[in-house]
Length: 208
Image 1 (cartoon, rainbow, N blue to C red):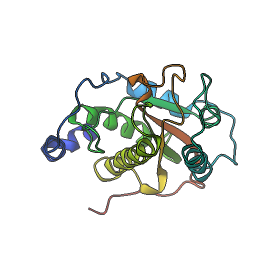
Image 2 (image 1 turned 120 degrees about the vertical axis):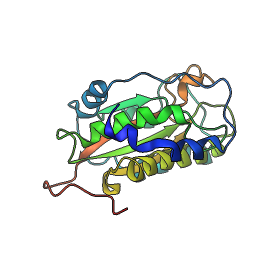
Image 3 (image 1 turned 90 degrees about the vertical axis):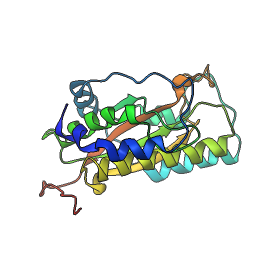
């Protein structure tokens, strides 16, 4: 167990247990620190035009226009494929952005990778995704709240600088398996490397 996962402790566990838990949740994905580090530092084709604001607008437009879901990857998913990334299953309480306790180990591993010297000067987007059950507007809202909850945990509990993280909810607009829109596998969290912070500076310290 790393020093980051130990930091969570009973406080986080108590907060999570205060809400009802989901049933039939997707099993937690096992992913090692090495896999996370490799995924987030892999060589990709940079696209300066690909911004969080653009992706958010694309998702909002798809929902507003009720664009039909196809069997191929969406335009949003194709754009995201260009970036260094990892995909993990983070468990939440039912219809909630409260992170379940079994997922804090995964968040700790992600934080360890972000604190690694290889990635220390990089920025990341935390993307929340749902399956196609429920309404598109609700899924978009819930996925944004869950992405924000993960960013908050990484900042407050694991001391990642907030300047390095941004939350983006895509709802069902970037399905992992478009041909099976209701499959639970589509409920996942993705973390994307979106480039460097600029010149190397001092490490951020949580003021608390």
